[in-house]
Image 1 (cartoon, rainbow, N blue to C red):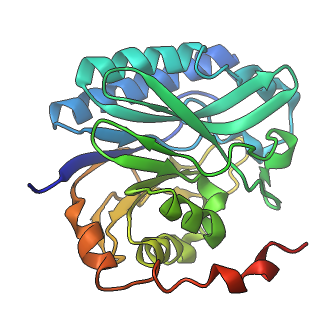
Image 2: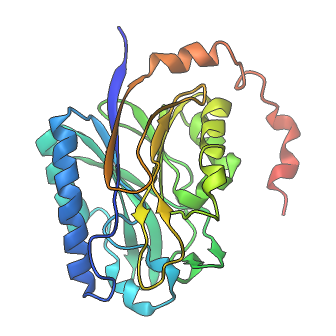
Amino acid sequence: MPRTVKCGLIQAANAAPTDAPIEEIKRLNIEKHLKLIEEAGAQGVQILCMQEVFNTPYFCAEQQTRWYEAVERIPDGPTVRLMQDVAKQHGMVIVVPIYEEEIVGVYYNTAAVIDADGKYLGKYRKNHIPHVNPGFWEKFYFRPGNLGYPCFDTAYARVGVYICYDRHFPEGARALGLNGAEIVFNPSATVAGLSEYLWRLEQPAHAVANGYFVGAINRVGHEQPWDIGEFYGQSYFCDPRGQIVAEAPRDRDALVVADLDLDKIREVRNTWQFYRDRRPDTYQSLVAD
């Protein structure tokens, strides 16, 4: 019997002035996303992912300790608890990328995965942390992830998460495939001029090399007062052949919806035997310092 899963991605502009109180910023962004989640539910979306640190602006454009106030515990914080209720309401798997506190002073760029019955399944912590000019000062805010490359058996598919800058590293993308991912979501915040030419190159390449679907999400707009560039949207799904099957515009909030035929994974892997023909016995130098 065919395994087709209706999946969605949300891209959105920041909904609040960046100098507003942190809790107000989070409240306004969550309210905005709840409306888009309602739309996804009305369209029958079964698995949904939002953008990187979805409930705040991309605050890594500056180095200010005030943004430490945006952290939450996972799964015991208010945003994940809320999304557990929303997931259960819609029978929808939701990937929830937020700023996570493990203990006071130890913070991660994290995505929680919630199943369609509202159960918290686990989390992925961003492993590769950039610190580059202009305005991607992430080492000021995030410790590198320490949970490896987990995959999560949801009600509809086995999913993995790779966050933004991670996508420049093929090793983790391969690890997700070896861990059985059928769909890999990459919530991002990336700007024109720096990475746009790679946006349609790297992630379809991961999909081809590993024989899975990829959902790539990018926010939209210019975030003041920093304006490090245009967050150019263009969120998309691509299939295991690297073909883009649904895409959002670059300049506005959008919900991207696509029906993903998971049977295509077997079809592609039986044609391109990349897993059979791997030579891990020859790759030791890849993990040398």
